[in-house]
Image (tube, rainbow, N blue to C red; front, side, top):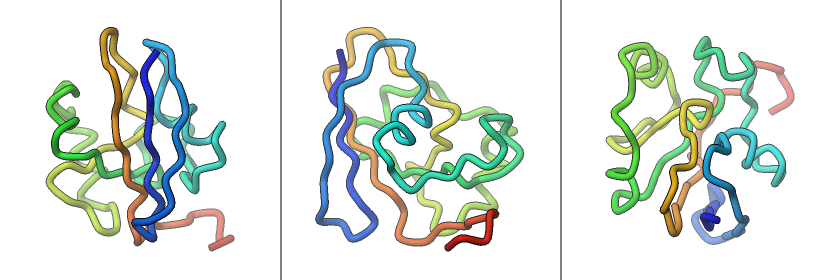
Length: 112
């Protein structure tokens, strides 16, 4: 099991959940009611599941594909450690990962 720490956009509120290896970060976040829209349902056709991975955890992840990089170019508030949650699967042997919800986001449903 891997502990996932979600840091809210305010930078103060932190929620921790447990994840299994092979779980997708977007699914974990949505099950925890994190504000990640995932409009394209993981098809890499939007950037509404943009998250910022803690620098110390970023090295756990395989490099982003060119398609993911293209979508991150459209993400509001993207940083060097930004990724799409739909493209992150929890790896075996990971102890923990800290994920920050960006302060800016795009809501394609028109609800935000």
